[in-house]
Length: 205
Image 1 (tube, rainbow, N blue to C red):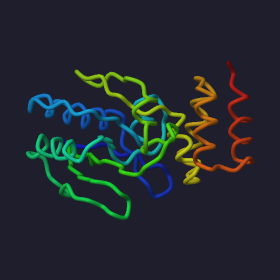
Image 2 (image 1 turned 45 degrees about the horizontal axis):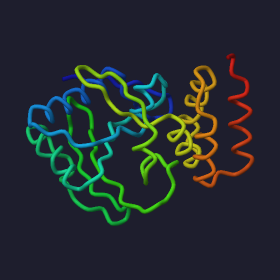
Image 3 (image 1 turned 135 degrees about the horizontal axis):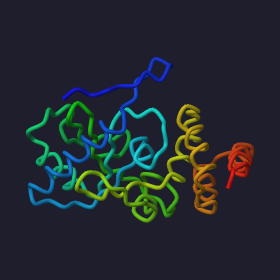
């Protein structure tokens, strides 16, 4: 299957929406065929793309709660190329695997870091509490809310990601309280938080 990459103009290529949805639909269909139904959330830039944000996307990120869930997804994808066999990554506290599905890298992992916060994109209760369901083929995919993704990209200072997120949220609206809490939890500076507030305050709505 040919995957279409968009040149983002910075030496980086980005997957199109149909590439992401094809890989995701195939992955979830394989899980269903195996009789498996692990709890998961889709995060990363792919989750933002599914929510209508046009930004660079390199892969599909699936977060699961347990290591055995990584193994379950890996077993369901056993007919696809395995790029990284399921294993523990101590430096990031993840149990992680990577497969190539329809030409797209699909990454499955736990993130085993303790926090009482519910405002992190991949850690603690955040991704499990703050998500929306997006149709994808025959499936409804739980994707992490954009507010948590934006805080991640602001922390990483990746303007090619956070600028499209800000533009989208200014036009479509957002949960201002959740975003404020997410930025605070990430330790973003008061100056950075003011910049975000000013950008969203210019919403045409």
